[in-house]
Amino acid sequence: MNESVDALSFGAELVTFATNHFIMTMIWILGFGYLIWLQINIMIDGIKSVDHNKMAYLMNSQGVGIVDIRSGEEYRKGHIPGSVSVEVSEIQKQNFSLIEKYRNSGVVIVGKTYGDSEAYNCAKVLKKNGFKNTFLLDGGILDWNGSGLPTATGK
Image 1 (tube, rainbow, N blue to C red):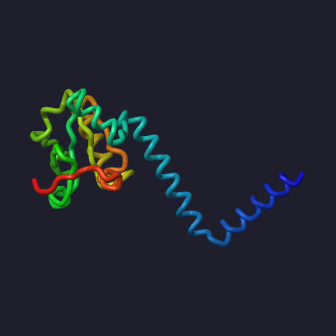
Image 2 (spheres, one colour):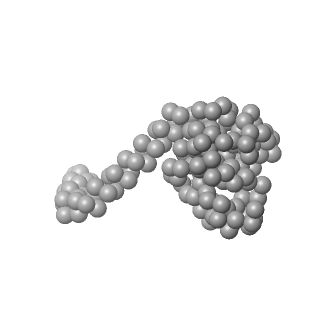
Image 3 (tube, rainbow, N blue to C red):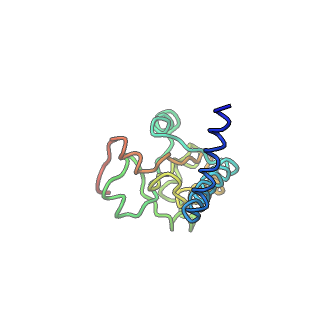
């Protein structure tokens, strides 16, 4: 009996909080909804996310290339060793000259952070243009750096 009373009390408190903090509640709901929408679209488009361990495996076993889509300046400040810098505008213009050799083996797109819409959009363009295996690096470069993994600087 006490458990059902506690559950009702919690529900009432939740409704009160949501009513008193309407804007904060809506921001939370919209943010959560966006993440769900993004994940559904990623599944529908067939673009998979990989963590840094899986990325290393794909590089070594299948010759997958790492494509860093951040600005040239961001790339020069710190990037994953062995990655290729390709600006978003080049992918949008379908200029794949720097990554053409990965068309059959695949690419891992490195963006800034998790849920990077530019990285996702680049992955969609590559997939649509015949890059067989197109992946997104979970957490982007932010997660890579946060994990203490090595980076290179310069070109």
